[in-house]
Length: 148
Image 1: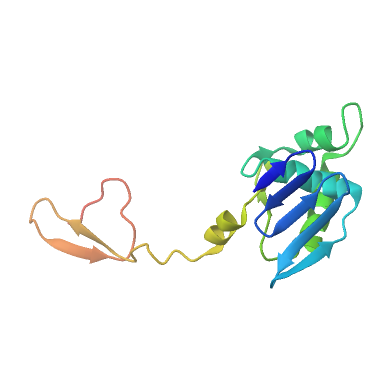
Image 2 (image 1 turned 90 degrees about the horizontal axis):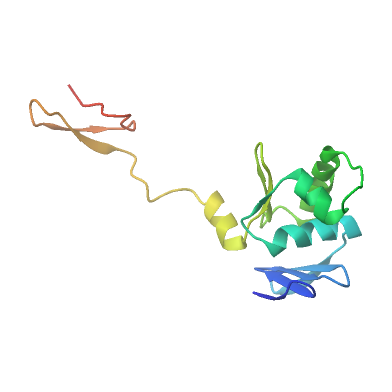
C-alpha cells in the first residue's frame, strides 16, 4: 500500500517516511527502525516507488544525486550493498538484474522467487511416433526430440 510518493511509502513489511528519512521494518510483530544515510534512504525510496522497474546505475545517480553531479557508477553498488546489510537478508527487497541495474522486489515476489518449485514435474512423458509407445524421462525434452 502506498499513500503518497512524497510523504509515505509502505511495501509489505517495509515503511518509509520520506520527508523524515525514517525507515522501519515490521519483524515478528514489532516495528524495527533501520538506520540509513540520506543517500541510502533516497536510493531505497526511488526503488520502492516503482516496484518491479529496473533502474540503471545512471538513472539512480540522476534521481538521487541530480544532474551535473559526477559520481562513479560503482558507488551505487556500494550504497546498495550497504542498504542490503542494513535491511537484513530476509525479506530481500533489492534485486540485482545482471547487466541492467537494480529492482525493488515486493515481499510476495521475493518469497516466490526463492521458493523451491515443487509443482514442476521431475519427469515427463514422451511418445515415439513410429511405435506409439510412451516412456518417462528425467531430462527435459529439447526442441522436437523423440524417443527412438
